Amino acid sequence: MKPATDINIQPHAPVLVMDSGVGGLSIAEHIRKTCPDTPLFYLADNGAFPYGDKDESWLVARVVQLAETLVSQYPIKLLVLGCNTASTVVLPALREALSIPVVGVVPAIKPAAALSQNAHIGLLATPGTVSRSYTNQLISDHAPHCEVTRVGSTEVVRIAEEKLEGKSVDLNRLQQAVAPLFETESLDTVVLGCTHFPLLLDELKEIQPRPILWVDSGAAIARRVAMLLSQKGVNSASPEAQDPTDHNIVFLTREVSPDSALMRSFNRSGFDQLRILSPADA
Ligand code: DGL
Image (cartoon, rainbow, N blue to C red; front, side):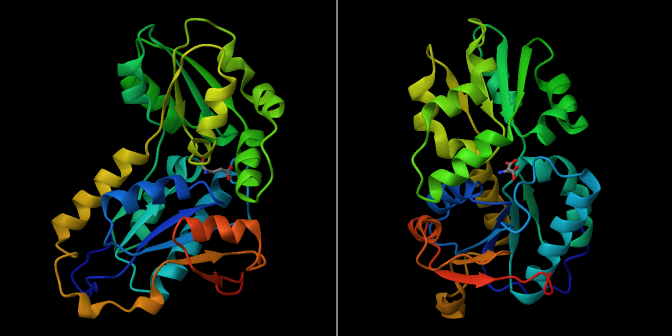
């Protein structure tokens, strides 16, 4: 990370949550509960959705460029990369490029391995995340005693995205996409290793053939954000510094109608202003 000595962080400056689409909302929701006074910005790179099948070097350049653009234009005090696909490859470059703290979201292999009674866990994530060397390392560090069944699916990401675009979830389609998780009786715990997937938790529970523990990173990320904010003391200064017009903005890289079901989903998550970040800006 660049030295932070010359940064003038505004006390009520927002935390930025980034993802390829709506997935990071599952993280934003936890941050709102844990840090209710912290304004949030959200960037959905919907112009490049999905990230799960993108080349690693392309992803690094894209995410760093978008983050640098917003951080240079707004007084953002902390960035949460609310995307496992990006976090498992972009974090070192992002921390090098930015002067603010960066929190990444990576698959919750460690808690899942500790919770599994049968030492058999599933990893449901994007094709990118399941095949990363970062993920291999997480598994050998934290779940060496576990059998790990990996399912990489862009289809499940699309189903989640469509749900928040107002479409009803086809349970057969979801069932087909996650079927390998249900094949072996011993698998009792599944890591939701993509931030889109907690948005489908009700539906996943509906189709599970036996009790399964579904584990995600949302609460842990929110605790980490709260800890970093309290360490820096950025929440303690006077509320007069707050500029309410700059709060709770959702940035998109492809235009959507302000009346769309997608915008209503962002509104429900507390994002009431829409701004388009054009490719020329980023
Ligand atoms: N929500 C993202 C993740 O956690 C990315 C999904 C995608 O764009 O493929 O991996």
